[in-house]
Image (cartoon, rainbow, N blue to C red; front, top):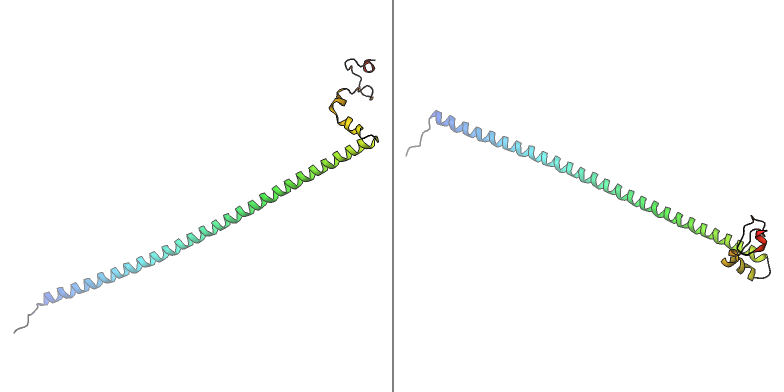
Length: 142
């Protein structure tokens, strides 16, 4: 049996095809490596974006918490101020009523002064005020 013989041109064509395949393979591997580097970079950037977004969210939550605390503090201060004002008003009312009650030993005097009907019939001329006629009261018309 005889071995098949290849011509010099066929041999060169075979070697050239092998070299082309090897070059294409190197190019493909280089492209895969470049794509993997790009993918890794994109993953890293995505991680940075997520970390920055997380940090911003945490900062916003902290800001909201501080604003809520400030609002609650201001509300407490407002309520305390209102309570203080109410207590002062009550004290003044108590002092005023005590002064009225001390004007007489008769507790009915305080009741009389607090009665609207007393003030309806009050004659300011008698009390040293500006005289004005009060229907049928002779002392105020003179």
